[in-house]
Length: 303
Image (cartoon, rainbow, N blue to C red; front, side, top):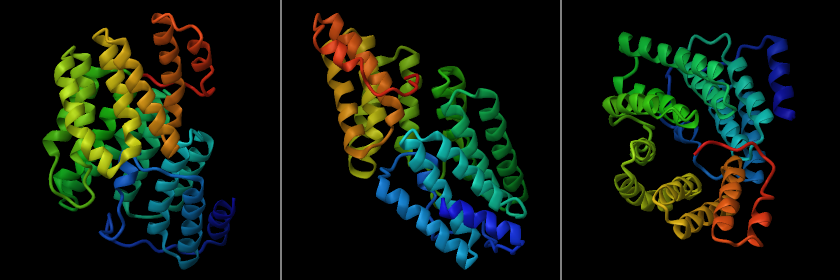
């Protein structure tokens, strides 16, 4: 792990790693650290690691931190949580002596999300709240716009979705939409609408939830196709709630196809394989069911 060794080497030597004064440099996109959406292949992981090392040599801590957050996302998409944790903690270590609290807020938010993926609710909410508190303080001081809070509330919302707590997910989604505004690197609105579809589903407003997914599908096809793994999997659940087994199978298979194509959201595929197996058994297709039931041996997520 060349870049981890390099981080330790620089810290041990006590070299001063410079960070820019701006909280979010306009020339560095942080959208990817908010959405967990982009495809990240093995080659792109190697590329991100090289960028981290190069920026550390230059003494550009901030770019290194943003890249580490993207690298963490890449590892999490591969369900490589050990590497993802190590990566985000490396980012936090780099910012230990920095006065740039807003950057730390972004790191805490990503760390909280990581804990939530493994259903470690207490740790997840702890770091998400730390992130939100920092951002609220920055807003109160006038150093960050109120719209910046939308990202924090959005992360709370999808965290509670993953914890299968729709009422809390709705509460924070409403807050995110309240603060949503036109700022650099804002979260794209279709991601918030995806969370809305989950809330609508849990309110048993199935048709409205489906209409919402149909509305955002073209945007994801054009901009972030790898996220369609989640869109199609949640769409399948809606069909299942309405008793349409054929459509349920169709959309689960579409989700698997996208996951295989982009090697993204691999941690969701065990759930999909499991549910597909159940649906085939329900149709009397016992030959297909056992094969699907042997899906990848990873921890399932609640959809």
